[in-house]
Length: 59
Image 1 (spheres, helix red, strand yellow):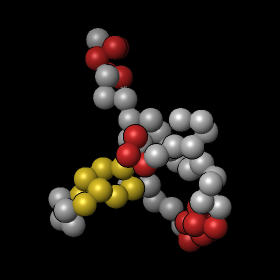
Image 2 (image 1 turned 180 degrees about the vertical axis):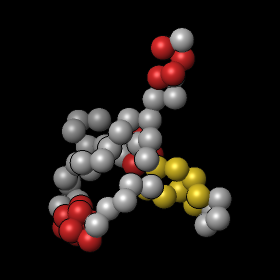
Image 3 (image 1 turned 30 degrees about the vertical axis):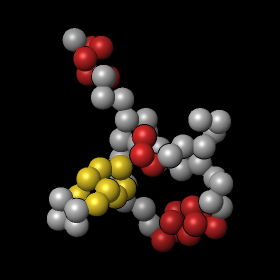
């Protein structure tokens, strides 16, 4: 992924049934959001790779 991470692969990017769309569930303050919007090429500090096999490997 060359240092850039897509929200689609993040474990914090979940489907919201109420709004019927995907959204980031990380609680960001205005400063964090402004930083991400200003530097769109910056990587998200809250990115966590969504590995659905993580639990299976521990069993």
